[in-house]
Length: 309
Ligand code: Q46
Ligand code: ZN
Ligand code: ZN
Image 1 (cartoon, rainbow, N blue to C red):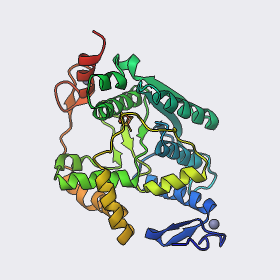
Image 2: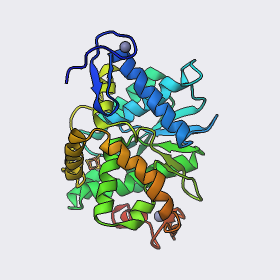
Image 3: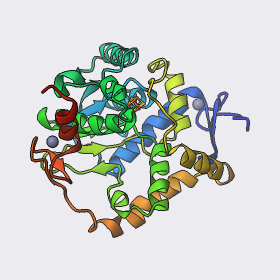
């Protein structure tokens, strides 16, 4: 569909958003995204006045967009947009030869340009192994990587005293995981699905400010802002299991715009409260003391098996 005129300024529209029946020019589309995320932060009380927020900056598109949008709010003089918080970023060097170096260098350059304090954590120094080591031992790289990222980002957040850890998950990610959990009736995972996970002992609060922004919107925002995410794919990337759910949801969205956002919001507002008493708080890992639902956490088990003797 042709975009026509921009609803906000009558200039040439470059974007048409079917779910809102809204045509916008480039400038107003960028503003619209920042406003939307600001409203999401407000509505779900993701960030409070003066809090310290650590952005998980992988160097990929969504994480760059997340930091850019948060910075736009922090630097805004508009009282409806401005967000008074402390923003810093962390990048995990997973030790994937030919790929991790590029991710780290994109993240460092970006933080330099925007003057954001930035930390790089090397997996090899923390755990004594890399994702390359895991892959060479025929371990499925992505499942190990998932355990490692969750553990290390949380540890950095807790040890450095941050109030929030901000992740770049978008609406398509959230809706696909939700559909997958519904279809497998995984009540435990459903009970933990929320854009704001509160802090508790050993866990920093985890937030997803982009969870109401679609994949295509983050792509357009990145392109219009001239953000250049890491070039190339991780060599271990496989088609994620959520891919087919994304395809199915895109087909539904095509026929009935706003399907994804209605599904995700409906879950949070009406289904999630019914599941709140199901969630059981995890115990502690016997080795590191961080939260774990089994005696020894996944990260410590990996470290014991593959780290230095
Ligand atoms: S970095 Fe890690 Fe991804 Fe590479 S090994 Fe898989 S999970 S594909 S986002
Ligand atoms: Zn406009
Ligand atoms: Zn542990």
